[in-house]
Image (tube, rainbow, N blue to C red; front, side, top):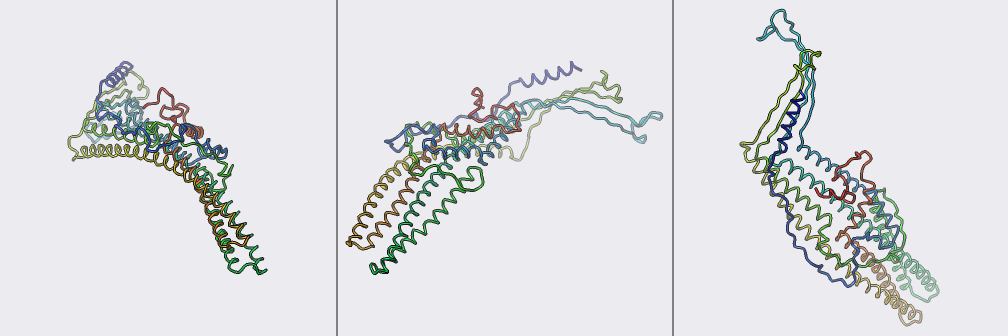
Length: 503
């Protein structure tokens, strides 16, 4: 029996080492027209896109919020679980490359009829027993590369999920920074509105006293009250925006909606330089571009799977075991049984289904090829728009700052001339109104300048995503119930063994 078992294993091993043909096209990266430089010209630039750029704002609360988001965001945890799912799918796909070993045992006790052909003669018992134990083996020989292409597609899908998670990390960090900047901008707008409301309340009180003394008319009192109420309307609207922004930011942090701490005012936030001197080729490492390419790799491999369906599947089967009518003789050499065989099955007529499946796989591959190319084009467009927006917003911010200074002078001189009796109070109201609007607009533009800078980092991607992802990996990888031994594709990219970085 041992000799038979060795012979069976030898036959299967020799068959497995036989050469096979992998059908379908091998993946070739498409040619990409990469611009040599960005469309916008920057006079102020520093190469910081590969650093943890949010730390350049020098706000420890922002740093802490981003870390909380990376550790607790629910969407990131879902993405981590999806990676584990697709890692298991790779194991499922590649399992077909190996023999399937199985075992079985059964015991049966039967009674035969004396009224059928082949019935036992008189004097022979009608009741008998059968004991059976066996090992079985089956192996589909991957002559046409169907299993290899399926495994290739599964690995590409896994990498696409990993890059999708990296894209989520990129979006999450940018969204947290943007929301925090918006909170600081709203805080400053609320401060300006409350200070203005306080001054206008003082004006109302003063004009009431002057009206009672016959110094001013009811018209001027009504004007002061109108300006007061106009400012009062803005305060609850700003407070509502603050609450909504805090609640949205709380969800990004993976916690229940509630207040969010702030460290500094928007005026104290450091405005870093615009990132520049970055080769356009770096953009091809953006997670969404890499994800689109892996989707294309998977679709390309599935063409081979569809083509392999035209050819027969060849399987080897074998069985080695024992069978006996008596349990006491089951282990004797005479009880040995075995069989070995090969099976071949293939299509003859399928009503055009195989042709249709091949056309489907080829059409999907073409769709994903165009999606990959348009993702690259969109990425370059996003970077250029973000760069020019940041540059122009800074120019607008500088002009807005000069406008505020000029309106402060206008307000000062209007008040002085009113006190001297040279102008009416309408002139003072106009100066105050224009200054108030300009201060609010300057604060909004200040926030927009920071947000535009965040948009540049988000559009460019860069290796800073690795540092951010490493923070999330400390929590999400590996889960507590995961096995200690993992395949290379189960590691996050930042911690994957260097020698096994490629599928």
